[in-house]
Every structure is written in structure tokens, then in C-alpha cells.
Length: 105
Image 1 (cartoon, rainbow, N blue to C red):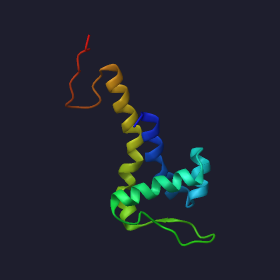
Image 2 (cartoon, rainbow, N blue to C red; image 1 turned 135 degrees about the vertical axis):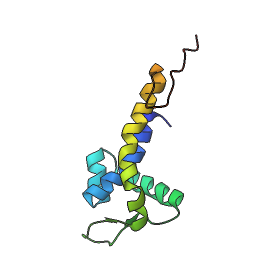
Image 3 (cartoon, helix red, strand yellow; image 1 turned 120 degrees about the vertical axis):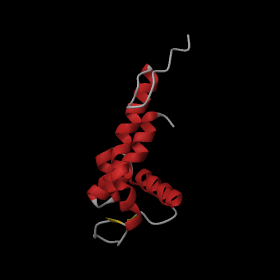
Image 4 (cartoon, one colour; image 1 turned 180 degrees about the vertical axis):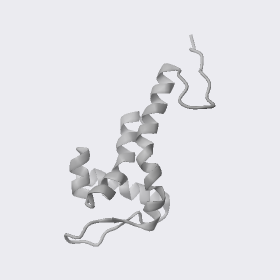
């Protein structure tokens, strides 16, 4: 998955939690509501349960207990993915305990 797609995928749960709405989260991210819903559905399938409680109507969407478990890490993930990609592109270490990978040439 290209870096930009990975960041978009990982940003959706935090945006929904912050905004309390799939529609507002989509607007904030510059995506369609359908795209955000699909990302959350994929996350819920992978997690094996409900990540957001959806009360319906005008009531806000709320993070479910299962979603709360991963939300803090999920907020860090887009930045970490970008750092990892940049480190790989430039052959730089991306944290303690890593080593520089020599150029292939």
C-alpha cells in the first residue's frame, strides 16, 4: 500500500472519533463518507468486532470499547508510517536500535 493510502486508511478512525460523525470525518479528511465507512468496516472486520457505536439519527457516533483499545496507537500510526517510508527511501535509521542499510548500487 503506498504511503499516502496507508496514512488515509489509518487516519479514518481517529477522525470519526474526533468528529462523532462519519460525514464530518469524511469532510475533514477530504474523502467521501462512503470511503470512510469502508475503511471503518475493514477495520471492524480485521478487529473482529464493533469499533464504533452507531446510535443513528442525529446522535454522535461513539468509540466502542474495542475501538478505544487501538485509538491511541492508531493516532500515532500515520506519522510512524511516514517516518518509516522516509527512512527507507533515504537509507536513514528511523529509531533507536536500527542500522543504516547500504545503497544497493
